[in-house]
Length: 59
Image (cartoon, rainbow, N blue to C red; front, top):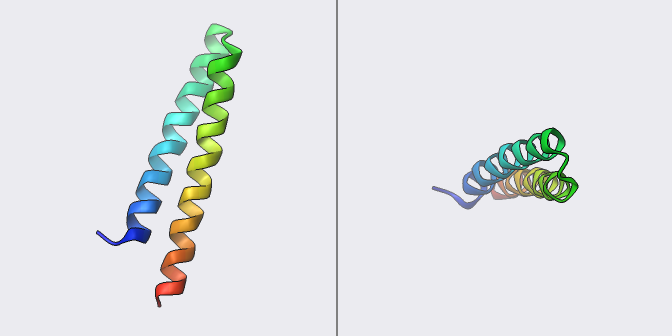
């Protein structure tokens, strides 16, 4: 698996995991969990963009 594909897959995974944490934090009133979810979601989006950039640069 190429590094750009791996980055895109891992980024999407972290986005979904972060969104799940966000929702769980909102439902339970746990602001720390909600903030962790937001941060992980954003990190996943960044990682996915890095994968897209690597793909463009490899061509």
